[in-house]
Image (cartoon, rainbow, N blue to C red):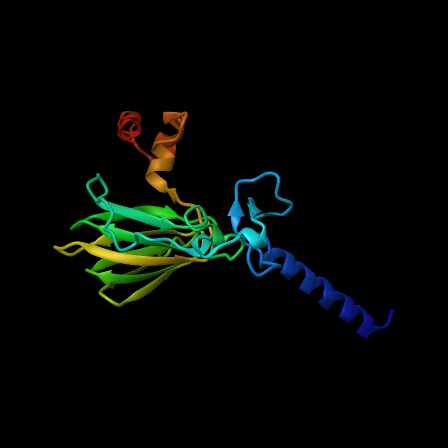
Length: 221
């Protein structure tokens, strides 16, 4: 095979590899719409959902009402996340996008968490938020910013991030996510509130805490 032929084969292989990596999550749709339906009789199964027959699809499959209503922030975190994903809008199936409204009481926070399947872009609608994310090991670099009304911040996929209301009044933010169901892993809830609980000895060593403190935290969560 000629040198040019070898180069061509290598390029094709790299393009094929990059294409397969891109489609590892939320693949590009191969049809205009694929409205999610819990119906095993359907012939097409995409992104964990069956597709409704195109003839049976309707405008309501792409509609959600209620995001104008504030969420209940009467909880220990002082925040509430109203998620609008494929579970709320079946028409989002295979489109790789969703959003959420986040309400904050004064000094409330959306605790450190990650979205394993989506990058998040957040815009502040009301109030003042301290936000940030931390890069992966070993750098663990913190990127943080105070946002006011109209400001926008991006949280890269999979990285631990947070939002904290540093104002004296309620705050509201809207987040867009690059997945129809980005998922959420709240660090404290996951680590100290797992079911069944993680062995306290494991967490005591991992966080360099007294075992009694670990057991106290596990009871809290």
